[in-house]
Length: 344
Image 1 (spheres, rainbow, N blue to C red):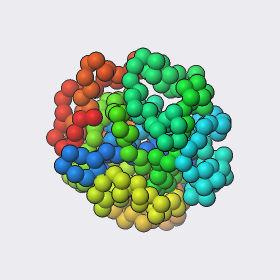
Image 2 (image 1 turned 45 degrees about the vertical axis):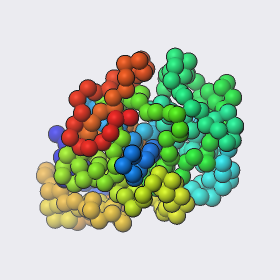
Image 3 (image 1 turned 180 degrees about the horizontal axis):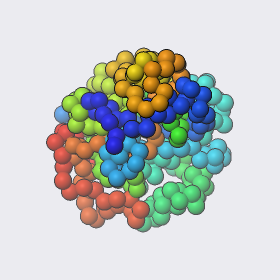
Image 4 (image 1 turned 120 degrees about the vertical axis):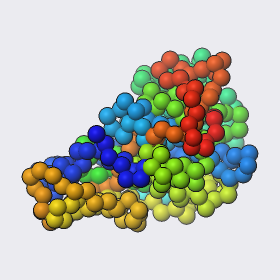
């Protein structure tokens, strides 16, 4: 059974895996490149809200945890696409990677947002954006992307669309711990919901979605009502000083993209987990079984998971029946929760 401190989730196998890593018995998996997007829109009462998805509670990993749309980079995301905004070379400098990798990560961010939230950051020209992504033809393309039957480059090319990289801002970078069996090198981006578009729960891994103010989501986490991994709550807190979505995007250039890597220490009868620069996540876990009492260090990373997720307590996306979800996305929940978000 999973454990929580406030609303922070960690799996029960962490202590044994941390101990194995410290003892040289575990070879860290190579992290896969991934991207996730904090999709924003301003609320009627003022201030930005963020779109979040709750992972299905039946999922073995972080079930019931809230997260943002996102996922792994597809190797085909490096294929040439029509491009607007900062050049690939400019993105490469900002992200500290080569231009091909920068394009793949940005493409993954845009693709995953469309696949999991139905929102597309692309347009017919460098200064336009698609106004409506509903309809059977759009859903057919989205399903083909999810099934890897269609590359994102072919999708954009067939529709004559230009990827609007200028609608994204790079915000943070977290890498999952070395003791995790599935690891991701995840880039977090911010973007504003394009005018005319709306979100819907298109992810097969989420059972509800919500628009919620960062401070409300953080409050739910602090009260233990909303489950989140460290990267999720950390990025939520980083949005709180901003009064509008435009201010968030304007502030993206100043964000530190140094990867956040967790550190695990076995000290006496406890495992100490810490995330440099994020003291609130430091936790001490009592050890059980063989190996307790070792005093060794193991560098690991932060629990950045790129699949949809958060915990119960947030109201659901209430899309109307006529706008219903696609064939492989779950329907919206009918029962809103107490956390204070607003429907999409």
